[in-house]
Length: 312
Figure 1 (cartoon, rainbow, N blue to C red):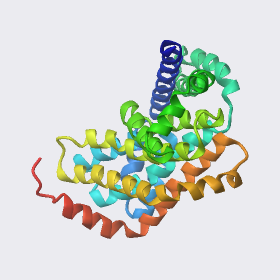
Figure 2 (spheres, one colour):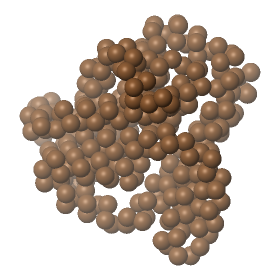
Figure 3 (tube, helix red, strand yellow):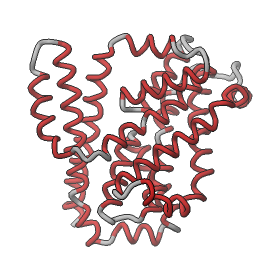
Figure 4 (tube, rainbow, N blue to C red):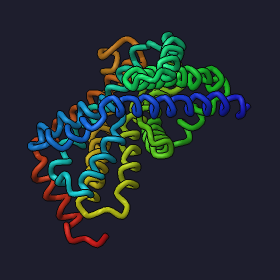
């Protein structure tokens, strides 16, 4: 029955996203003003910007948050568009840390983290309180995943996913569309990829479909940045457009290689979920490093597309 699938899945997704938000808030509070100073100080060259974007995104566990933050800085005149490019490339790499953590399979500690985190948040000490938020967020993330994955057997029995794959063109096309739409709707590529990892591990979806979801989620995550760039100065719009073009180009280049990647996946890991995590990491790393040496000409291209004197 649909209600038997939607309720646990919807509850799990809500808990996952709430945990992600709670953890990010705790980490931001722990960092205080250091986050802004890091983004503003360590962006003198594309390479330094790249590492800044990588580390900051790994810390915040959200490429969307870092991208939106960067758009805000550019719109305020605190960063130039060219300085932001390295941050954008680094954020695509930093976001893979979340997926790698999920692949560690430490969900057995979810309740422990929820209890410890909940207890710490009741304390008055700011450091312990924010640390508790981080623990509570981590626990909620893994608890949410457990709820989302609880519907895998029912999904296999119902055969809806198989119908979607066979009537959506090909597994690759269906996977790309699913990755784009789900990530755009929930504003979290991590949640979308976590679903793909769990469903592939449970043999609900085939590997090409799961890989395509990863590539599609990279495009879907651009929606948040595009929304943040509405009614901003041209330089901020350039940041959002560059994010979209980079992620779409990466997906276009790698999508034809999905059959090859699927054959090589078992060499990355024997665990299905870990295979997806490693594929996402390699995909984002290769795409970002390939573009890094060409930041200056790419910046000129984007500036040509969106001139500085463009209307607001």
